[in-house]
Amino acid sequence: DLPTKVTIIEVGPRDGLQNEKYFVPTDVKNKFIGQLKSAGLIEMELTSFVSPKWVPQMQDAAEIVSANSTDTYRNIVLAPNRKGVDRAIESGCKAIAVFVGVSNSFNKKNINKTTKESMAELKPIIAELKANNVFVRACISTAFYCPFEGKIAEEDTIALCKEFAESGVDELSVADTIGMAVPTESYSLFSRLRQQLPEILLTAHFHDTRKLALTNIYAALEAGIHRFDASAGGLGGCPFAPGATGNVATEDVVYMMERMGIDTGIQLDELVKAIDIIVPSISRKIETGYYQLAKTM
Ligand code: HMG
Ligand code: MG
Image (cartoon, rainbow, N blue to C red; front, side):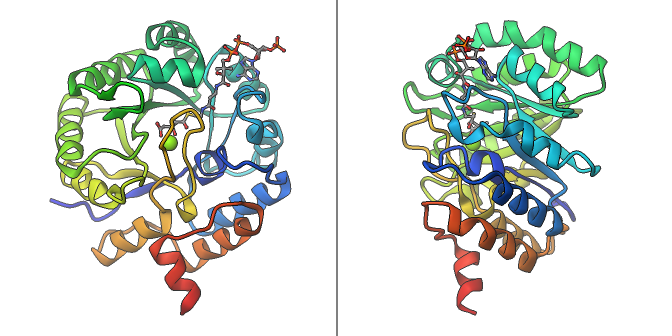
């Protein structure tokens, strides 16, 4: 049975912008975030506390967090290691996302550690964060395919998800980093995860490289998933995953869900205004279905 309601976690300010060549001014980012919140997106990845040498776009993380410190929304920031988590906590963050790839080669390229080394570093940190009532999300990259290793075995992804669940995280965001999964794979992995980890918040994160993200989302919906990451305007992509393009567009997910009678709590017209705020500051053209349609109406 399909749910009556789903939750969309907006990742535009983070995944959407991290790959943008030119620095987007901090006040534009904050206006974008504010308008996304006005549209009803109450869970959002705002930024990342990563190395400014690796990802210069995210160098204003502390300023973004402080501009968003007065509301009660779930303002999530990414942090890859001890230094990132310490910076996030100092800035007053109450929701942190750690991120690890199932594939070693990808994890090496992304955070310069093997998957095992990352897990060894992160487990005591997660325990500490939980003891301090911080919401912890774990993003699982290359859950289906890796740009360097190809197809990832379902067992390996499930094993890493279980390891994270045992470490005490609140949420798993399971990602098709390079947008290569097909709906049968989405259904298969997400039904097994849903069955084996019934307690945890389970979220699907699809990139739309091959235009299969919406069908993969529908398959995950049928597998019992009702949380989806999406990026306004379909922006996004990991700078260390060759071939990765944007995330599924928030407006397209909202449109599909609402037409199916599934409540998202999001106002499409307000969401379009958020995209209008960011468009002049980015180099990518927005080609997603609903946004283009809205502009020609
Ligand atoms: P490293 O070079 O191995 O770091 O990079 P290190 O520990 O050797 O330290 C080197 C220097 O970086 C030191 O400074 C550290 O202090 C500093 P120095 O002494 O030379 O002046 N440093 C930091 N500075 C700020 N913040 C930090 C930090 N850590 C060390 N957190 C590191 C390792 C993890 C830092 C680097 O690889 C990195 O920043 N990687 C981030 C990559 C990234 O942001 N990727 C995109 C996000 S993941 C994604 O998009 C996938 C996702 O969407 C799901 C999906 O679709 O798959 C989530
Ligand atoms: Mg991503």
